[in-house]
Image (tube, rainbow, N blue to C red; front, side, top):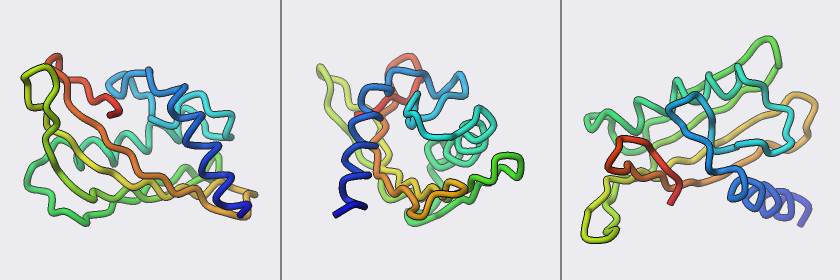
Length: 126
C-alpha cells in the first residue's frame, strides 16, 4: 500500500510539473520535490532522447543512467510506439517506463509515461 501511495503521489506531482520542455533538458519528473538534481535530469534526457527519436530502436530497449555525484540512477525503457489523433493530425507517440532509484530511499520509483511529438518538434506528455 505504501508503494502504491508513493506512485499515486508521484503521478500527481508529475502532472503538475509536466509543462517543462524536454528540449531544454527538463524531465517529466518536473519540480517533484524528489531529490533529483539538474544533472540527474540531464542524464535521464540523454538516454530517453534516442529512445523517442530513433525509429530503429527496438521496443523493449532499456537504457541506464546514473549520476555519481547525487548517487541517483535508473533505467528508461521504450515500451511502445503509437499515434495519437489530435485535431486532425496524427502525432507520433512513445510509451516509456522510468525506473528511478534515489539514494537513501528504500523503494525505487516506477512510472510509465506517454510522450507525443507536437508540430513544433517538442515531446509533450499525453
